[in-house]
Length: 250
Image: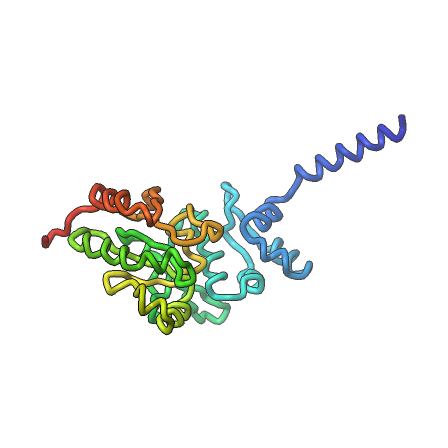
C-alpha cells in the first residue's frame, strides 16, 4: 500500500512539474532552441532578461547572448525576424544599436547568381512563379528548356519567373560539364536566386525532404497555395493564364 501511494504521489508531482513550465522555458524551447546549446550561466542570464507582453510574445532580450547562440548573420537575422513577426511587425531591415550608439543593419534577403542581395520584402512582393530546382537533379536539368519555353510563352503577362538554386557554385560547375552542352540552362527570362534560410517566408509548404523540382506561385504578397508538378505543363500554363493579367503595355 505504501509503495502504491508513493508511486501515485511521484506521478502526480511529475504531472504538476510538467504543467509548470515557465513562459521563458517554453519560448526558448519553441522559438529559440539554439539558446539551449549555451552554457547554463548564459541560459540563466538570457531568461533573466526576457520580457513578454500580455500575449506571451517576447519584447525585450539580451541580444549579446542571443547572438552567441545564432552565430551567422543569416541565422541571427532569421531569428530576430521571427521575434518581430510575432509582434506583428515585418521589417524590411533590422537596425541594431549598441551601447556606444553604433548602428548595425541586418537585411534579410536572397543572393542572386552574381552575389547581389535582393531584400526579402522585395522578393516576397513579386507576382511570380517560383521554381526550386538544382543542377544536381536529373529531372531538373532535363526540364530547363521546357521551363524556358514556358517563360517565353507568358512574356506578356505580369508575372516573373524565379528559379531558386541551392548554390551558385553548383551552377558554375554544371556549366563546365557535358550535360550543359546538351541540355542547356535557364535563360535570361529567369531571375536566379540562391536558396537560404529565408525561403519559409515565401512558402511554408516546401521542405528539403520534398526534393527538386518544386513550383509555387505568389501574387499580391501571398503564397497562392498552388503547387503543381513541373511535369504538368498544361496545368502550370492554364494557372498562369487564369491568375496573372496581361501587361498594360501589351
